[in-house]
Image (cartoon, rainbow, N blue to C red; front, top):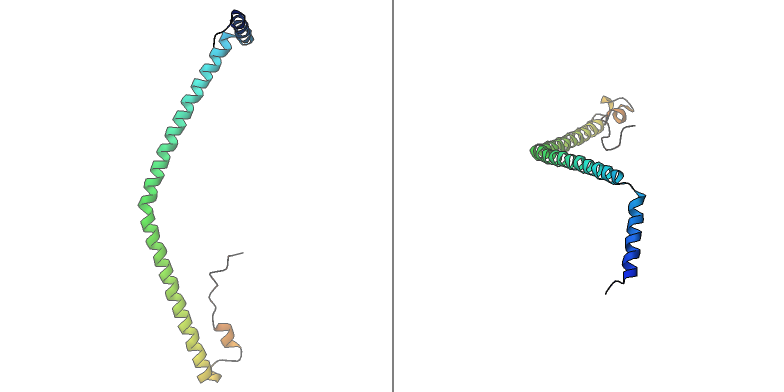
Length: 122
């Protein structure tokens, strides 16, 4: 596709008009600002990459320890639940075997005084 001389002249005129809208100093200052911003973004990217690598390393170090502590807490909770269940059954057997050992209503009050750990605190 060939350009006619009129088209080439019109294109040159339009380009010259665009160049005259913005001065060369303004274009150069915009380029410098963009270059400065690019450098800052690259620095920020490098810092964030380093932070992510460090965080990943720290997480790898503590994750196994955290998992073992969570398992320990779960087993402790299960053990305590079992102990309290046994205590409740002992108290109910004692209350049925020796009804006068506990005053009326005292067994219901003392049956289970531990807090319910499943409900959120207010």
